[in-house]
Length: 254
Image (cartoon, rainbow, N blue to C red):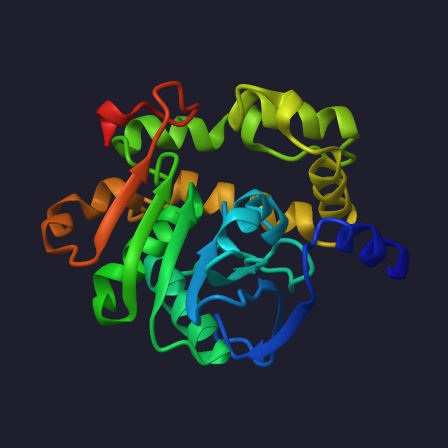
């Protein structure tokens, strides 16, 4: 485990904090946060990354550190946090409470939120419930489940989304090529190494696959598509970055 932690820390740009909170009805919970503090301003940014580990959002940290304290948590079931079985959880309420408890644990009354993919859904449901705690909202890529459920459930159930029992570095690279980036050569090798370390950790694969199974089979999991009637009430200023070749769906489905 010490070797695993050392390898993963190669991808962190600054010191990591471990916080204990009672999330998901489990107490205590320990999760990993990576933070960068600016010497220029005291504003904050809480990044909910891709529904994965904090290191996937680190490409944003270099420019952001000029002006912000940037905080990226490992989300439950990912990275160095605890393992979880998603079956039976109320997905929307769970994610609202997750962001609330992370901000409370960090002492952040308000924050700018960045959400990538699954993190975009987390950020959206939090901003709808607690607009007074969100300064600005930035959504990168398709907020997960923006297309009709009949389409996104097929994507979630596809073999491309599942993690093999014994993943290799080539499996990691292939997943990035298929689902995430157009120019794999621009992704630092350390990011792939951190992904590989994640998937070596006990319980990661079962946590990830339980989320896919739950989303694919839960008739009440509307995700972002289910939020459409509420989006007219979204109060924070919101910026979208959404590529026209997004694996999960083009902006026309948003």
